[in-house]
Amino acid sequence: MMQFGRTDLLDETEEMVRHRTEKDKEKLKESSGIDFREKRKGRFIVTEIRVDETGAEKIGRKSGTYITLTAPGLTADDSEGFVELEELLADKLREMHEPLGLSDDPKVLVVGLGNRSVTPDAVGPYAIDRLQEAVPAFYSEDPGLIAYAAGVTGQTGFETSDFVHALADKIKPDLIIVIDALAARDSTRLCRTIQLTDTGIHPGSGVGNERKEISKEVLGIPVTAIGVPTVVDGPVMVSDAIESVFNYIASKIEEKNAPSSALAVTPWLHDKTKEADKTVLKPIFGEWSQWSKEDKQQLFEEVLASDEQSMFVTPKETDTWILQYATLVSSGVVKWLSPSAPGSESPAPAI
Image 1 (cartoon, rainbow, N blue to C red):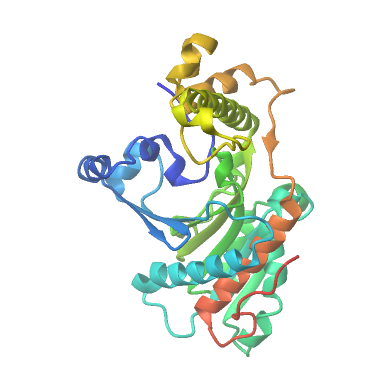
Image 2 (image 1 turned 60 degrees about the horizontal axis):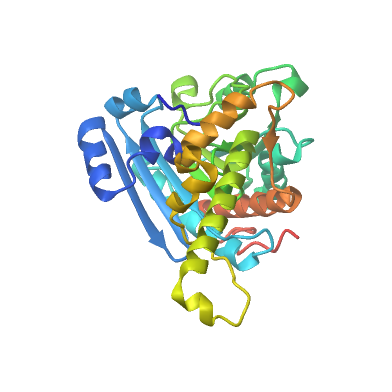
């Protein structure tokens, strides 16, 4: 059986990818206890997945709610896009927490996970830095918002989960929010996706360095995780590059064979969003050109499994992306908790 690459995004797991049509989604819900809904909201794709105990056993993920906000085409300097995504994040935080029946002024502990010395892993600590500007507006003798950057076990020598547990015992918050960088298995999702879940988080799980989980089961307090995928496995990039080349060549062949090409007077422009018919590639590249993208990825994972070739890849504009998401997530949290507080207005560009 094909094994998908490592990912922290539920909608990238094998079970979700294989059930994308409406008919399959309904079948998945009936047979597996998984309710999968996807819709467009402006320029964004909103995926909501609810997993019960039956579904959790089937897919190997915890039962709960998973909401994924995807922004295809978002660029690191798209300030307007980040403002719109921040509004959507605040709305989904509001919707997700309504069933908890929190008070109008809940006490919330926000924890930024990750290593601020490693840029792709720094979205959590940087978000806490941004929150410091808003925290005074929440403070009184009994603060309503506590922001904490936990560091990583390699720096502190202690499990992050133990730190959070100790803080929770002292502060007794109504809710804990953890912010962390994630791993994806599709390069188009890098820095263009936010995942919200009420199931908590295993720090470091996406990069194979899984630590003790931070969850309601462990802490006895509701935990919401906000994650942004910032890295993919190296074989994912190889697979995506091969797919892009195949799609380009197949599109070129289709265009050359089209009657209209004889009348063209301008250079041919490749439409990257259009999926070409790759059957035309079989005489050139053989049977493997007909393999699915996932099967090609599995091949590259097997071939490039050595320590020398095993690596994670992050976008070249990572510094900008991380600052943008740190601003977006912190402002979205503040806007949800207290729309009138400083920092709840649309965030200033991070660049």
